[in-house]
Amino acid sequence: MHRQAFRLFSSLALCLVLAAGPTAGLASEGLDGVNVGRLLQPHPDAPEEMKQFSFLVGEFDCELTFTQQDGSKVSSRGRWVGYYTLNGYAFQDDWYSELGYRGTTWRSYDDAKGRWVNNWLMAGTDEAPGFVKGFFYGNMADGEMVLEAQGSDTRGAYIDRIRFSDIETSGFTWSMSRSYDGGETWLENVAVNRARRVSRTPAG
Image 1: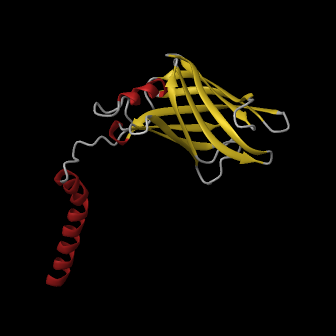
Image 2 (image 1 turned 90 degrees about the vertical axis):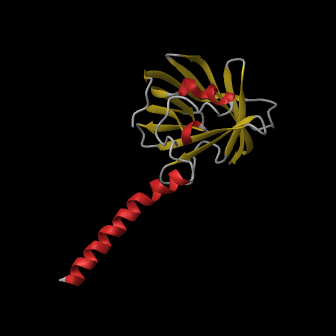
Image 3 (image 1 turned 45 degrees about the vertical axis):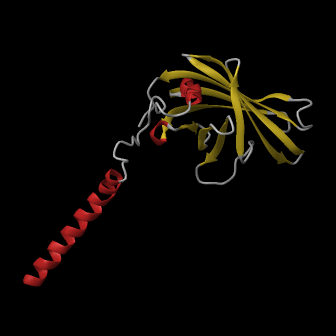
């Protein structure tokens, strides 16, 4: 009986240590004030440029049209959800398509290099069908966010240019253009996504 009681006490003590450990550790490192939720604004100490994606905070209903290599078009609806994360030092937005695609874009401002760094990841795969598999870099200029990345497909190497335009409180337009000759000429609006705001607060 004494041995059983000792084992029970030891198990309870271990549970308490495991439960308290992370919190105590964060507090001891001065991290007890970290906000790990979906945030509506950047951290006050983050670069000023972090505010440039504030237009994407919330939830949006979207209509996406994508032009395939054979010229045919595929249209679909989706939901776009954006929020600040990592205590307000980064931005993240999630995409949910009625076609079954689920993905997220990670956005961080590199203050040393003076540019945004973005990366798109899809759930359940390391592929990015129709899009660059890698990093986009860019900046806000003249009221538009413009980001570029390099990729390749069956036609060869290309540059993808993503543009956030028509930015208003009610929504925005996202579009992608592609160049196969190093930026000399562009296939405009290979993909166009028109986003209409349905909430200023991201779910979750």
